[in-house]
Length: 326
Image 1 (cartoon, one colour):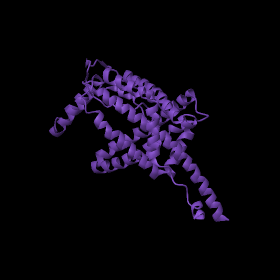
Image 2 (cartoon, helix red, strand yellow):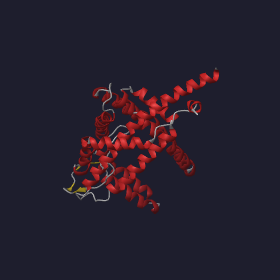
Image 3 (cartoon, helix red, strand yellow):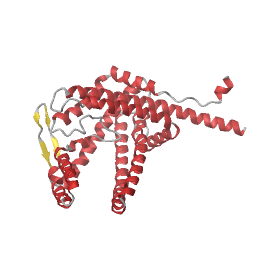
Image 4 (spheres, rainbow, N blue to C red):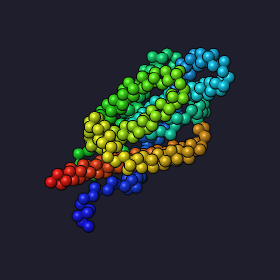
């Protein structure tokens, strides 16, 4: 029986212990949830950064084009309402390294304090500059948030990365993914536009295929920041370890991601029950901050355990190959 066990690969780590460790860690050090709470309070009670004046001329031109097709007029009304209520401060919520937020997708124009003040920009250059600055601030806030949660997950361990190195490498990592997204998205949008003119049906199929690839890649992209904050890895080593983990542990990692998404998005329906102009929204903000931070902590625990398992698997495969050759 022992001979049979030595010939089997080590089992992957379970996802339940990671979730339990994450929730226990944040429950014992709940001060870290003040970061997403403060962020959501700003997006909820603070001013809005509007862009309607910037896009109004384009919307007017689109309305004149679609007047010949009444079926699209209703959609134009939805577009107009969306841009009237859109808050560009949501650009502070960055990915993969960012502060989790409940209110970043909110389009509420009022709060318990009354109507929210709106700052508008009319120049495209000023708008792009503001977006770039807010994105950089979002990276720094996200780096501070990830670093704080990672320190909780590595309590008692030696050789923990310093704050300065973690923030620098995390910011470079976010910048790398942003530049790669820009380089790939521009030709993709042009290609999709050409397909739309040729065949809308083909464009829909290609769009679905692209979205599947994006969803698949979003998992290693998200975990690519974990090595920076847990192991003091530089950005490219952290990216390589994330994709290696995806390669060898896709089923286990997939279950972890599915459970985390179900918990997060399912509870978000509960957190958003209260209207934005009610103080009851505070309960949703606090609940979302705790749950999302606990899930982030769980992801750090699972990343550490899963990478240790991948290392053990590689050693087992190497030993197995050596025994077969012998």
